[in-house]
Image 1 (cartoon, rainbow, N blue to C red):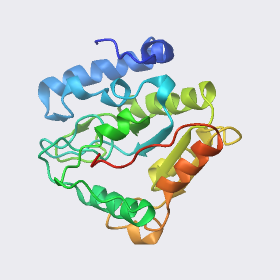
Image 2: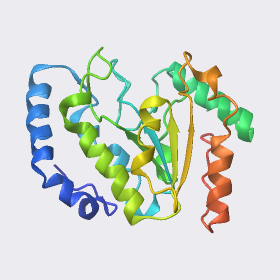
Image 3: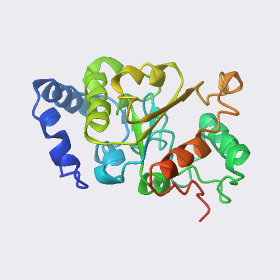
Image 4: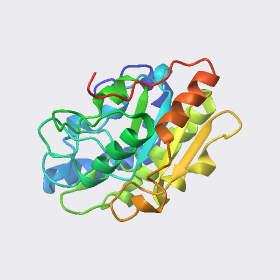
Amino acid sequence: MKPLGGGWDAVLAPLFADPQYQAIRRFLLEEYKTQTVYPDMYDLYNCFRFTPFDEVKAVILGQDPYHEEGQAHGLCFSVPEGIPQPPSLVNIFKELKSDLGIDPPANQSGNLTKWANEGVLLLNTALTVRAHRANSHKNCGWTWFTDSVIQLISEKKEHVVFILWGANARSKKPLIDTSKHLVLECAHPSPLSAYNGFFGCKHFSKTNEYLLQNGIAPIDWDLNG
């Protein structure tokens, strides 16, 4: 695996050396050989590559990658340029407009790379998935790995905003030291649950208010800039 850069290689070195991670690698080598798996193996760790460890201001937790062709590229909720915005992302943009008055991308893009570059770690709790089978890699070891990532961020940093949308993400709250970080939680932005508390959560403005209170530059959520 190529170095991740951005300080992550040192932070994650204990995980990469762990036998549990080696088991994940063996599993993935076979899966990529015999199944259609998303994202492409070269995009698997993009959430780390695009957001240096020292620059992490917020963590948005997703469940697992999109499982249809061309959608997943290693950032939760994000899709590459030219791919239609999935329904959950459409709702995220609606809440952003309601909260901060920021319009959805004018070109209909669903690419959230700018957020990653702004210090938002877009982390799925499983980093891979079989085509057309949501949550199919949930039990291959990724839960241990990403839980450990969350704990490392909690331990090694201060004043990070953890944004937990939906039951899967909210179950990770015990991993976070709430005495030195902010946890924001609500329903998932999926059309099945967005009206049960996602809409109106104001997590974008609350994130920036907390960062400013702690002397940290706010996140520019505007993808049109």
